[in-house]
Length: 534
Image (cartoon, rainbow, N blue to C red; front, side):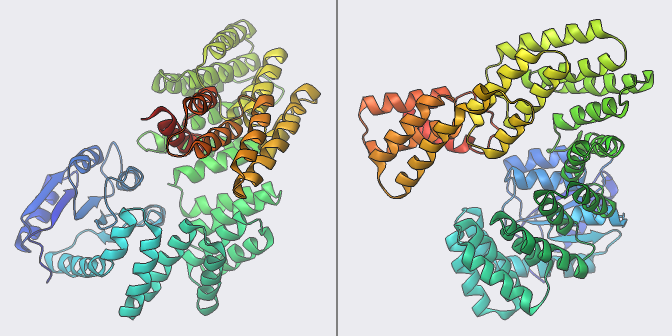
């Protein structure tokens, strides 16, 4: 038996007798540091203040977060290290629950009831494995993919038992290092030897990212033939099908995944969005309702689920009027949304416009007009940009509500901020053919593209001039502003003069309203810290 005297344990279960029983088992095994909790919220609070080596966590804790949602939040918040052992404990064994829990990869799954002998057997194996993987896990905790690669190579040579697991760590490290050719060679070699679900998903994702859609599709389809119970393969295939323009088929694939694993909130969200775009409003309503209900205690809770449900319910009426019961459902959904996001002005704008659309169909144009006017007032007071997707959606709502000028103004702003993204410009083109809106970004994008090439070639002064030309034409474009700021800092070296710093700060100030959800926000923060000395 392993030595557990120095291990820090956390036992989480809503039944005090079970907590006491497990704590007694652990004491008998030599454990001295054993904490207990009865709900997921306490787990998170305790993990913020103490690092645990082993967590035994019940899945079903009654009201509040379940074990899956706790594990998601622990991982996303980095509240547990890669060296921590997380064991999901439950008396349930339904396929939906097991698959949903295993998708988030706890270290083990333990079914109640269990005795001391079975617990020792399971923990001993897990501790032995974690000890062997320690150099890899430490490198993962330090976010050092080069060290992960080196450590996994060394361990696979020292102990052949861990070679398959080390291959997975190597693949992750190669991905993080951007060594795509080596990653593809590794994954194709693994799959040529034996079909492995994680390798299928990794190769499919890589090929999709590289634009090799037919190959990616083949990988996912072959993977599903071998592993039809792996929901992640369905997700990957659906994404490829959507990229190939087969949105109806993509929706069907996601629905198949949800039949297997219905408790995955993000999958329900994606299905709702896709079904809404496919004008399958009944399916969209079901998916968004599931996502909304499951998300109440999840870190993946999103206002888009509430808004999506309200929009789908409204659209189901077609050209007819809304039933009173449906309008009441929409009112309740949006009321919960506005209460839960009372401090988010973007959500408040979107909720009012969505409510107004429903009221038009339920025969209350006066209240719809009032809500639209309130939304327009809030829109003018916003101190942040909408995301591109939200901009396009809100512009469409405004046009439908008879606010064409406000819609065009929002589309113009969207083109100025996100005009370097072809997909965004395609979305704008679906709503307007105004050349002033569509043509403004073309010249700026060309200068930006030339600037990127010059920067990559090390011609930093030339790059800066090109970025300046682009920014002059699109002063609110996020990518161009960040590129200009980075070039200014690069050209200034370790001690840039005040003129360069001032120009850099102006670039960053111009896009300070970018949403925190934008994938470029982290880059903005890094540049901001350098420019302002934070």
